[in-house]
Image 1 (cartoon, rainbow, N blue to C red):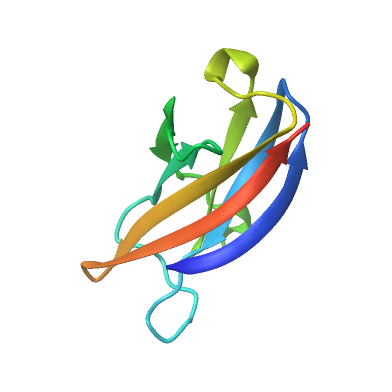
Image 2: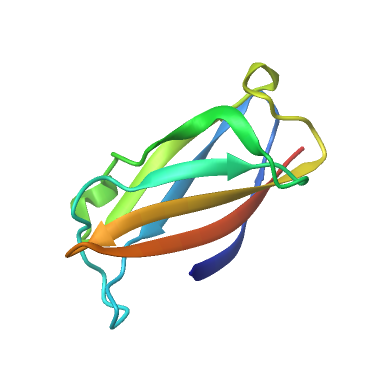
Amino acid sequence: MIEIGYIGQVTLEDSIALSVICQNGSNLPTDPDSAPTYTIIDKDGTDLSGETGSMSLTPASETGLRAVLLPVTSANGYAADSLYTFIVSYELSSVAYLVKGTFKVT
């Protein structure tokens, strides 16, 4: 698993851009076989209901860079003063990779 650590904070009822650079086994940026998927997990380790999806944005058409603009709203299960983990999974030539990061909602 690739750990990208803390990516910052977002105000509740706003949006945050989650982005990853998909890398191969040699750590070189590489376009994935298909759009990576993400899951959001709360501080108790529970998947946030409905907070999964595809990272289909390709900002600046950079090799391997994929992103999603995530609405962080109370209706989607987010709470202020909470830390969330995101897990991104993707495949390169049928080899699975995972990326993990965190962000805070204020």
